[in-house]
Amino acid sequence: MDRLKWFEVAPEGAKALFGVHHYVTKGTNLPEELIHLIFLRVSQINGCAYCIDMHSRDLRKTMSVDRVTLVPVWKEVPHLFSDQYRAALAWAEDVTNLSVTHAPDEAYAAAASAFDDKDLVDLTIAIAAMNAFNRLGAPFRLPVAAKA
Image (cartoon, helix red, strand yellow):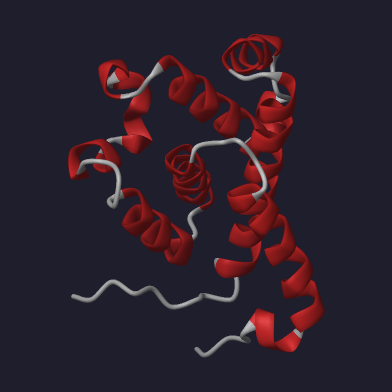
């Protein structure tokens, strides 16, 4: 079934959301690789095929295929991700699953020890933005670039 192209139907809403994306990717001190890592993990949790495809491709520009493949099980391969990346991944999972996790103090403390105040807020904005994109990409079934 064809679904609406949300960004064409509501261009002002799309512009606003892409403004947040631009801020996160261009206006913060967060490393680009970390941003795409968080975007990928959040998209995996939310099941957004379009975003998983896009951010996997973005990550493979700077990260090995092995590491990208193992993002869903990052806790089992701690040697592949730095302390900061692991803190960001844990925070991304807890914020994305907020109704279940309630962003526990332990996760906050780990994230706060890995990032300065501004970077932690920017990281949380990045997580929130990707959750918003996933909630548009998945229901409107944006097409993936991947081919059989």
